[in-house]
Image 1 (cartoon, rainbow, N blue to C red):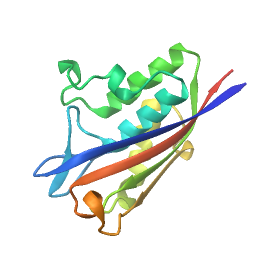
Image 2: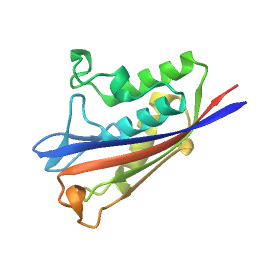
Image 3: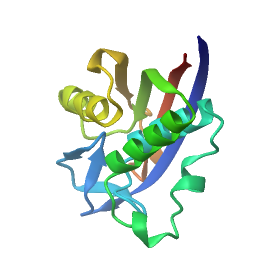
Length: 159
């Protein structure tokens, strides 16, 4: 068996009165992430971790923000497409560990739904998906609620 580890990072600007989708869950908040797709920062970081582990470049290479096919699309679809790319190369996902960094809203109540969305998109158990959240202690653009950040690591396996 061959294994690889990948790392992903993503950041999105927060805007007033914009939908806030994280992990495929729409959060009730006065601000939301802005981007070409649904701007799901968590799923974008996970996609980048998976693509990097398989040496398949990055999310922007496969899902360009200038391509109208991806405008407003659910990032759960981008995650499914990412997993297809890995599968074509013989890789399967072992586990994911992710961290969100934002001041508000509280993420903890939504983690089980996020885990289920990701598990369904990838085809692995929710027990193989860790999602955590922290604040930036009111410092920097995250602390001022101008943006949201996500980090992810993953393990992929090839038999």
